[in-house]
Image 1 (spheres, rainbow, N blue to C red):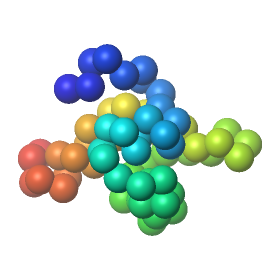
Image 2: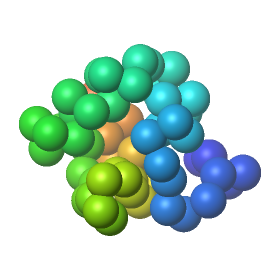
Image 3: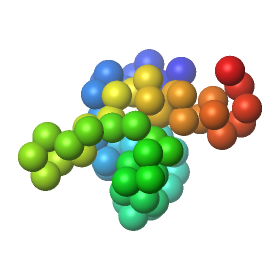
Image 4: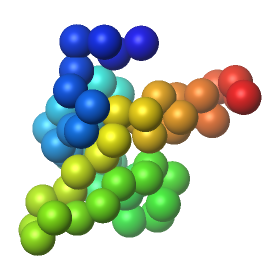
Length: 61
């Protein structure tokens, strides 16, 4: 899943992957629903965390 994407993603890429707004990505990051970390002012999200977020949302373990 998402083989064409890098292993470490920025917010814009997460937006495209999940088809959600920039604001929603930040909401997910701040709430901890989507795991990521900040490098200075820039958020980075491991691709595996996006995959896990999707699995959690659809109930796949």
